[in-house]
Length: 267
Ligand code: KIV
Image (cartoon, rainbow, N blue to C red; front, top):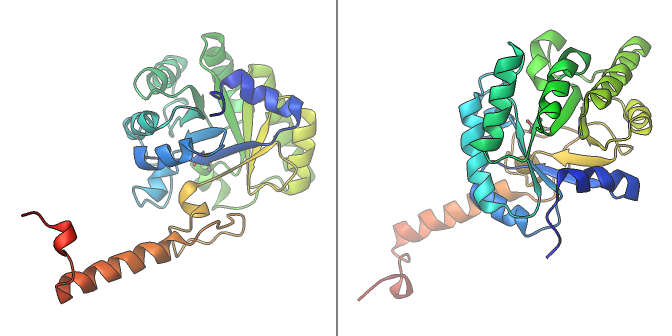
């Protein structure tokens, strides 16, 4: 069994040239499975709003939602680093709320670090949280909590000015003390430039191969949603088909009387 992944170990992976592998997870059953692999970090993302709750955006997700799912995941996880996402409006209103909410993700959610979205505009919050011992992962680019500002889920940083702004955001986050930065939905070459500029690991999603690691939503990589097929999310399994097949066979056997058989029944 490999060693527990901690924040300093994750940071050290960049120096060692080892790619960081991160997946999202929302419950204890999947957490136990992830725990038996060599995935480095697990994110209880506010993507739970889409994946678990069926919303179109992550905006309705509450801190209580993330705490609930984080606690569940923590019960199944022993080795990977557990990161909890700070939902919309839990860190933007004022510093006191940001500190309390981030702290609750650690104390009640059992997360070992928090993630928040934004660059220079959240640098003061990042600096304050890290100053009191709360490890923070940054997240820039196509940040889903800003979907309305972007006018949809569109690749960011395509113009020279926008690319420069994201480079400045990454530098500000590093300066403020993040231990890693998620780069989402930006051109591969820009992700490469940011990764070369900062000393902390960059973890990409829809950001090409030049990042220091990659993250995918667990349900996307397992092929659990037949209707969601974004270009960036490679499917490593087609589990929706397996689920439907199992349910179809169960239905048939119940109706034919083949289930339950004697081996599933008690005298
Ligand atoms: O909420 C989430 O799952 C995320 C990842 C996609 C990075 O932020």
